[in-house]
Image (cartoon, rainbow, N blue to C red):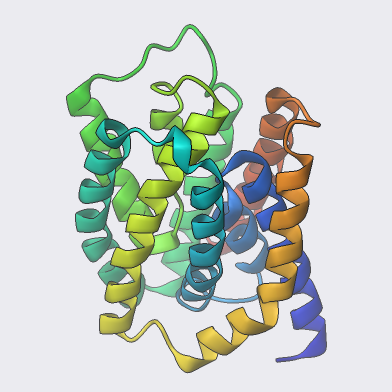
Length: 242
C-alpha cells in the first residue's frame, strides 16, 4: 500500500472508530465517507467490515448487561436477511452510481442525526420499525451503514448504554450475515484482509480513545460534530460523482 494512502486511511480509521467508541455507531459513514474519494465502495466496505467485527464484539462485551432480547433479536433476524440483496448490489452496481447513492445516504443520515433525539418525534410502530430495519439491512449490505437502525432504536431505549448494547448486538448479527455474503460474492479478498490488518492499530487506538472519552462530551455535542462531518462528506461525494 502506498505510504500516503496508508497514512490517510489510518487517520480515517482512527477518526471513525473514535466516533464508534463515543456513540456505539457512526464509524462506517465517517470511515467510508472520507476514503470514498480514493477507493471504490466495493474495496472499502469489506475492509471496514473486517475492522468493525472486533470493535462491535468489544463494545457488546462491555455493555452486555443492558441487552434486551425483545429489542435486538427481531432486528438481528430482519437485518441478516436484508444484507443478502445489499451485498449483491454492492458487487454488481457501477462504482460511480454507488458513490452517489452512498453520498446521499450519509447526507440524509447526518441530517437525521441533528434531530434524532427530539422529543417531538414519537417512536415508530412495530410494522414501521421492521420496515425501517429491513431497509437498514439493505443499506448495511451495500455500505455497512447502520445509522438508520440507530435512529429507529434510539427512540425505544432508555439510555445510551442500552442503545449501545442492543444496537451492537444487531450489528454483530449483521457482521455475520455480511461476512457470509461478501465471501460468496468474492468481495472478501486477501487484499482486503491485509489492508484491514494494517489499519487495526489505528482502529484500536481510535476505539479505545472514544470509549475513554464517552461521558466527557455531551450527547448533543457528539451528535452535532458527527452530523457535520457526515453531511459535508456526503454532499461532496454525491456532487463529485453526478
